[in-house]
Length: 112
Length: 114
Image 1 (cartoon, each protein chain N blue to C red):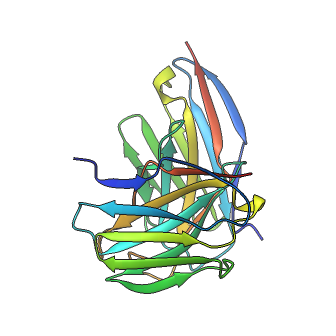
Image 2: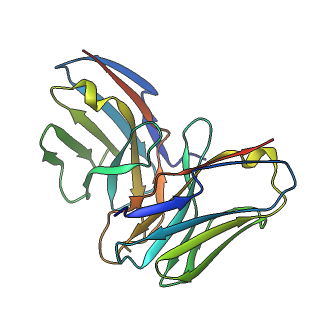
């Protein structure tokens, strides 16, 4: 009965690899987000989708590509991983007209 | 550049004491100011939020004080408990839409000693 779920929880990979993180929400929300939390715990938005349409696209390298197959899913694909991509990535969701964003448990990505 | 500045970076309080975390912002277009609580290994969770048309909001032991003219807001945790030990983030959102961009402060690690 998890509200916002992410897979995998941990991801360890080599530089140069391509990886994906999946996010699903069962709250019936229409907006989903990806955030990056760095080693100093600073949280920064990367992308957001409303009704499968990209509405926020922060200054993120184009190696990062979000994909929203439907309103309940927002996946993050990362090409050519770099050391600096190591962080915890959080998915979140919200409902239009409501201010609250609900965060997933996070995916800790380690690039070696 | 940091649009929301949070202090202190870390805070140690004795059980039963008052914890105070401060945030300052520059963008006058911000119209929604939430506080999020994050426990180790978990995602942030909304704790309490305020809009600029009120100066204070209280929910249980948690109170937000908001000073629009000074562009500052703060979180007060009364009767702090060891279970309150977590990282606290203030945030701010502009553009009037419920799915607008949240800009977070740097976070405050709160430790409450028994």
